[in-house]
Length: 255
Length: 220
Image (cartoon, rainbow over all chains, first blue to last red):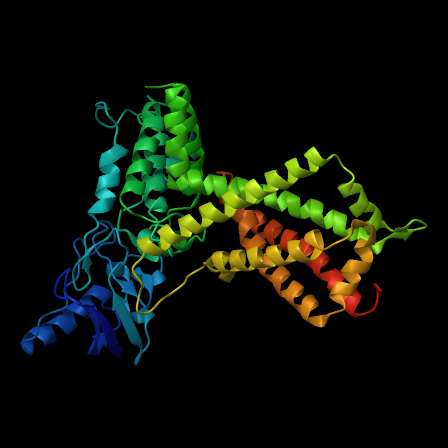
């Protein structure tokens, strides 16, 4: 079993008002099969032994499916290996590496403590329109409700979004377009969500704008940083759907 | 009617709506660039009546005054919308961000990250360009005026630098227009990228060929 000795440059900040700073820690004897979060656990145990405040960070399932873990590693959310931070393993790093660990940064994600940020702005976008108004019942029987294979695949790929916020954190403009477009496309593509497509698109885009996210400049950093590989095709679709929704609203196709 | 006005106001103040306006005006400017280039290429031809570019410039100026000014004001409006909205969006984007101590980039191109810088450079160049050739030019002696201007190396180098900025701007702009107008999919996006680079290379290469031809004595 190989072990690594690393230098960590970690963002420390006591609370939202405090002045943040980078602090340096030595991570010694880290097994290369440890996950990134387990590496931080090891460092934190040492800090606790020394009577110091451990590094605060978000985590939950540690299986790559909940979207709770964050961390911008060397300037890239989740480290840029197409996995969540909890699924990023230390074998991706070399002995003697210096690793910069910062929170997911965006004005719309206010910092709570150290590496923890408040990502509830994403929940507010969902609350504005990322749902279906009527009861759709339990999963329909196979072939009861025909959906084209390509459409089902596209909806499923969009639904893979776990809402971690890496798209916002990686974006040079802190835009939430990839998140919003994935959530809108997921429902707009399916028969249960389609009837409310225009209403949903307008509500979600307007909420996204109101929350102070930036504007997309088509650099596709979001797609590259997304641990679930959500495609920027969804952004093009949202642009299209938004034009259609505005036109429908203007001429009163729906009220 | 009220619904239409309300929605239109919401559209032109939304993020996507303004992006679409920047994309549409950008597309108009790309078309203008093609037309302008086609006109400029007449500098390489001449006949008994003199250089073709002199004929072309005189022809442009002999169109009815109302049409000439309609085109000029139309272009100015398109340009103003493009520049102002892009600057406002950039200002918002800057304010939406909290900066990292260690910045990392995965795939954003240099040209996409410098759109505002190259854009402002092009704006400054455009003002000089209009001052030198439109305000102080004589359509009948266009050829002589251009060649004389480019015989000054400072003028030629400034022109080449400006066109390099244009290359960077157009190289991101062309494919960005397609994505913003909702025409991007993972199958065609690489194609748009190739088209963007080729378009920028051909257009900017052709523009740069003029000062190079003057400096190397091909045009004199």
